[in-house]
Image (cartoon, rainbow, N blue to C red; front, side, top):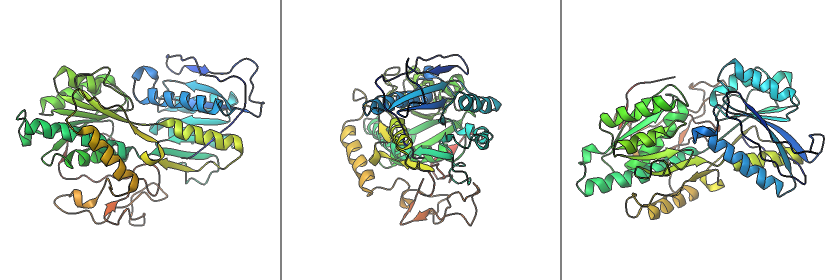
Length: 411
């Protein structure tokens, strides 16, 4: 997950975007070729497109920001961006197409892309393949496969603090009772990345609103705008007065606003489409990794097999707080919590702050090299905390803690 790259040139290029399924954009400028030692050609394979205003949009803004930063150093990037790639054999085709088009690096942006990417990598050993948010490439014995993610659980914890402060304000002002401080969380799938995120979010909320509880509904898709909206509305009907999400679209935010409840988002500032509901969002700033990876590549330096950083590295950020609706003192609390995360005095998964069936978590394991949870895996609980993304970039917290109710599951 750490990589850096390439290239010198007089023109900086930014791709024109096509939004058709599997569409392809190339950002080459006239007179620029990948034969130029100052130019690198990168395949950028995306599960959606910018229209989601969420997951893929966030990757594209990171791509464009990194392109600008690299251009200032004389490094030119030619992007071959393919949108709306499926988590199926079309991903194999897209990786092959990017390879045959001369891409020196191929970046896959979705969790479900990795198995299909790995079907291709041995045929192109000279190409660097990167799988974002995944966990199988960094330790597969190949030199040309890599993983990347960020400590997004840190941002989710802070978003939870913002939500919890709003809920406590509502309790203090008599708008709801303590037992009505219910969060509804729209999740994509019931596996580690999502579980880790919503647990961190809940712990953040609980740190400032002790009576909070949370209900989680999984939609079985990363990006299904209608299902995400329906899940949010059902959670509100089940008593949620705050909605959050680990899904790709903005519809949970608009659903929350339509019902007069509050919301915190992911990947993008959602206050523009839900100004009366959305308090704040957290996102990964992908430009940090892309810049570092591309610069390393072009400099002939080693690209880390597994890259992961958090708020202290600028890789995880918060969007602007919606102070029109946030609880008083929220901005100051965000600054306090961010500092504590930075200096290590706050551990998000501090085992003294939660229980599992009434018991304190004493043992839990990180994934082993085969991608399984076994007794031979690394012990992730030490120094009073579960250490998420310590042994690999991809999350591995899968515990079901007290206070969070799963309404369904989806793998």
